[in-house]
Image (cartoon, rainbow, N blue to C red):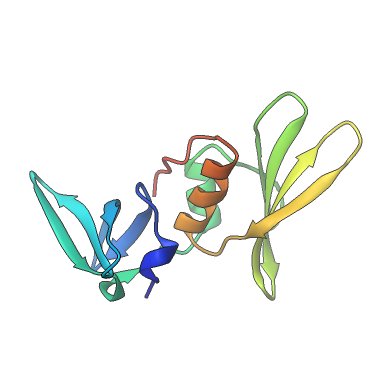
Length: 129
């Protein structure tokens, strides 16, 4: 289950066996998405997160550096790094290549959490799953 307040428009989540894109969230906990030409609203408790996997990262252009470590260049000297295998989850870093400076941004165990980090950085958050 995902809390309604943790969802944003554009988030990818699972509804039953389907992967859906959130179109709207409401204060009463309803979350809306498109189903063909219709818009459907359901209780947020019916939605499940999509776990972030190496396969999803690779499908979206991330490169494997070493086992459990993936990166995506965002400028000539900056890249995002995703590191799997930590007890508190998948860590996401912003790193600068010339001097090795890095900032831990957050833990993102699910696709929608990585989308939030990408949006906050002004990057394209439309991921393929």
